[in-house]
Length: 119
Image (cartoon, rainbow, N blue to C red):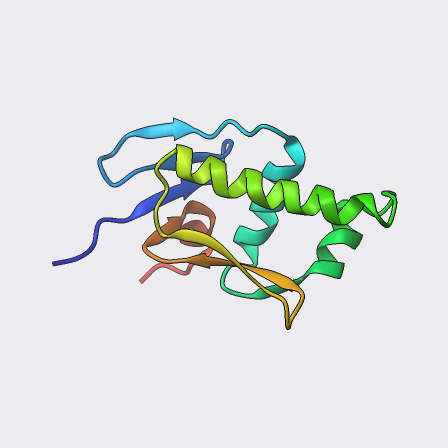
């Protein structure tokens, strides 16, 4: 039996279509969390180094404040996905690599479908 997939729609705004076919726009507490999630989704299942994220998303922030803002954004992404019932997406982090990885299973992203060549 094929597992039911969740669809994440990036085209036309960030929406999630759950396996039961409910479509919901995802409302984010901050635009930074939304932007970081989209970036991580583009680089899903890849380790993204913490310093890279800080340079991209908080280039002007104080060196002491930026890591706290990153931690808050990661927490917000996790909480938001959980609140919307999005299973199969998680964020792992490791101290050794000093980075984060958006781990994705049983998720389809509309942009990837659109970019993939027809069969």
